[in-house]
Length: 100
Image (cartoon, rainbow, N blue to C red; front, side, top):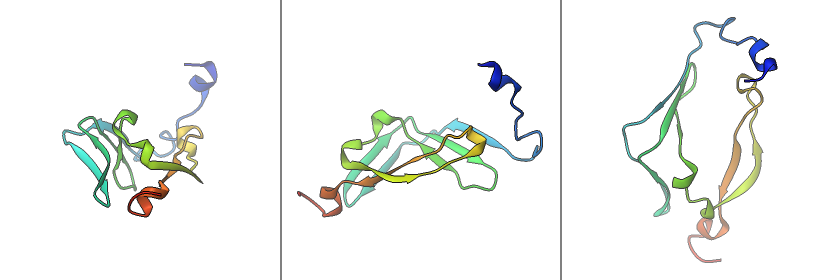
């Protein structure tokens, strides 16, 4: 941990009722689209955050990135020190329901 990070104040001090938990899920989770399996894992985690719906986080190794393309959509979160999410879209062949 760097010194800069140690000195930074947590947002939880000003909003102590705000909770964030990240925990493993006991379930197997599969994501399917148009009959094609996009993700299948028994190692998924759930993020619970006050005033937000729960979000699944999948291990990269259990996601079919070959069926996706990167998009220009990006998010920003100040509580995650600038971290966010990158958008992914379905590949052209999957959107068309088959081959190119």
